[in-house]
Image (tube, rainbow, N blue to C red):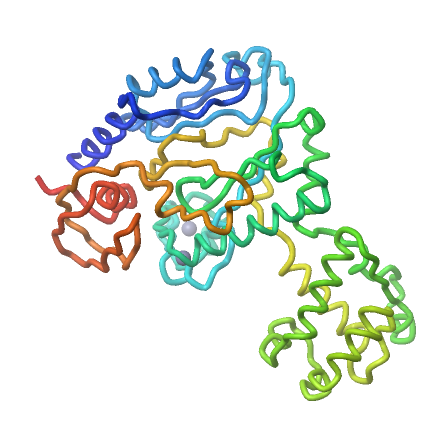
Length: 409
Ligand SMILES: [Zn+2]
Ligand SMILES: [Zn+2]
């Protein structure tokens, strides 16, 4: 109770402070605004605000734990869903470490089935393997590796959107989500009225789903037929991505890389023929010109490269034309960190654990049950186990929000 009051107070101070600026949201009057309330822990939806200043006043009075706006524009944003009259929606992408299997999530992420109590480590399954339940308690952590992985996926997404879809970097609005991922948002007349199906096509492209060159074009699976099936790579879109990816793989792959790609070839043959594989196979499309490395191997490698080059987005977010997404400049209820926007060309140097820190003053005394070593701002803190410590406010709020600590009075 005291811990929740402490976090509530900090959020309240943040939203009431004259120095807090909620960045302008385009066409705010036509968007649905939603809130998750601290006290009742219920979702307040179908709200509408004329301006960000009236919204900010509301935030100071209500103090929600999380703030969302629709990516959609409506004639009547306050009406119930089927009476809103949809006018269009931004194109949004969500990249979240929750959906990317990283080597670290087996270490720091846990889930427990709400129904039967069965649990495990790593990425939360869609359904419980014991009882089929779909609701879980999760305990997660956003470590540097999670954040780095999410950033790499975002870089791939931005590259695809820029190179293959022709958006300019200025049109790609990039945000750190305040937890374990990034959002990319495009507000442009040409995409506003795309329906869910059209957005699914974009999702498939970005994810490399259903790439025709990787599917066998014939159902006749006799050995002789299979050897005839070939593919050639040109220099646009996914073909170009596969080509560059294959070149990179052929030049640098170790024995382990070949194993990970699931191909069984003689490593000596492979490594002694790198130049020839590059020239004859990838450049000239003569895929069977090195003995022992045939078309089946190349298709497996191409699939592997596709997995490396595609962007791991949360596909549901992009196709949902009514989706609520977290509002820029507001606090994340699971971390006390801010959702922050930055120019796409700053992605590589963007430091979420520094730039998303909202509470920059004071300290708080907390009792920590367990926390790994972590960095916040310029401080490296922890690891802690069953101990009382005095930490900078931002770190104390983070550990309390993560359910790892209680405030000490
Ligand atoms: Zn279960
Ligand atoms: Zn991690």
